[in-house]
Image (cartoon, rainbow, N blue to C red; front, side, top):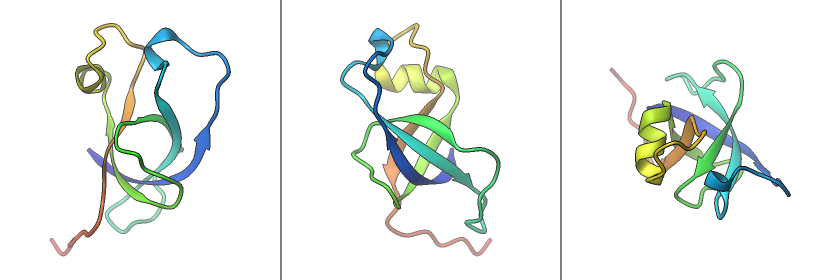
Length: 90
């Protein structure tokens, strides 16, 4: 799991059947210092997150498919939690 910040929503008029009824977000992965780390990713939102929110991000296809309960979905990243508080002191 990674921390990420939601930077926007994605709207697709045509998408794979596995994505029907899902909300897609653009999420910037963050390091423990909360600074951007790597490129932003497209993630399926499972918790109702919105722009500006700090979220938990899963970036592993098998875990993503297990959460969505779709065996062969072309999904790699999911938002699985909205972070209310983080104590990162080591």
